Image 1 (cartoon, each protein chain N blue to C red):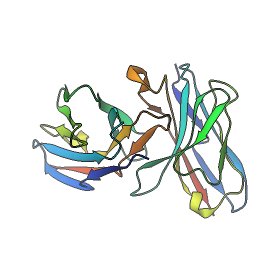
Image 2: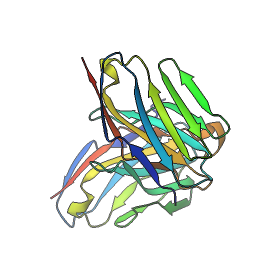
Image 3: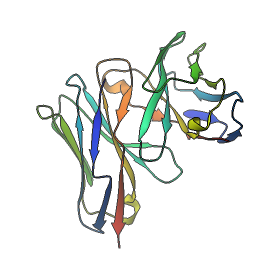
Image 4: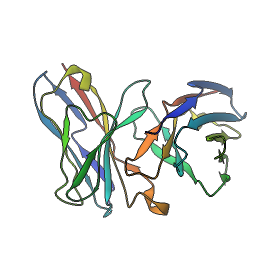
Length: 115
Length: 112
């Protein structure tokens, strides 16, 4: 198993540009989520999905869109990038949200810089 | 929503000594408390976790304790080694579907 994969690893955007951060998992996990990590702030939840076709907002959703058309993929879209979105983005997945299946596995991260 | 406070933000200990990191949470419905270790430039890696029906869990040099009444949990690392140097994050997950709420992290420095 490849686990949780993310592409790209690094990205530089100009203000106003759009892009999609890709996330995929091959563990048949139902729950997937996106976090951003900023210095001194820990990890904050952006959006999450409890299964294909179902998404919801987390703590900091503004400026980001998500969709979940398949169990495996959970892309994060920035429609009009802003310097405040400069951060490291982590995707995570788990089998479920309850019991022994809710251990979260993280992808390697995408480091995004918006100029 | 859930709020997780983590202390201290930086902890420096001598190699071989013990290190303790403490977290408090606000949502009494939270029932899952993992700890992650993150090395510079790497992803968070789960090192130990505890569920609300257990008061303590140990894995070699690492232990976690949970006090549900006081709503706090702690990470204990004994016989610290240079490779323990990293940033450690606590987190809490409640009964809802909104994932993990993280503390802001503790930078653990092991002095030789």
